[in-house]
Image 1 (cartoon, rainbow, N blue to C red):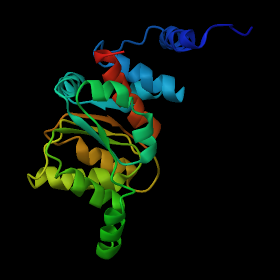
Image 2 (image 1 turned 90 degrees about the vertical axis):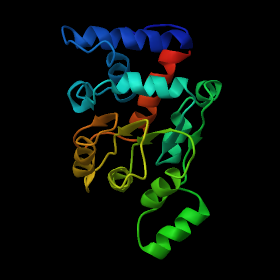
Image 3 (image 1 turned 120 degrees about the horizontal axis):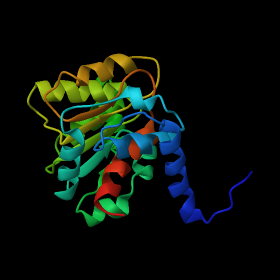
Length: 207
């Protein structure tokens, strides 16, 4: 039987259903809002197992956002999905350099992906940044290289690219790093998941 409800009630009811379907599954209470919002976005309960968090990753992400950090994404889709109104109220903004003409020109000249060049450009931003990567494994590889070289210290890495080529490997490269991270191990992820994780953090601060 179809449920009749107002638009504002749909999300609330969706989260109630998610909680019901999780049953006896125990989630870390700090991580639960992130995991549930990803499930809400994807209808995929495997993220209960796939999402891995470094120690205090959620707390560190929340602290960074409260202090007005920016967010860098690797797709315009992820940028579009992040709640920029809340982020702006906290003093931050979202950057995506993938469509910048100078990024495309430099990538072509060097024979590398635009994602790599985008991350190099992002490393020059003066503010602390959360990196939300939902599409390009080479973005994660670039972040790893810059972190090991001492050129970058992200406030948080959200590593959730989706696909088949270098996806699994690029995510695993983030796990040994001494930086906060939320990573979806395996092949699953996407720009919608990256945005959902960002929003899960933002909604814990303001709504």
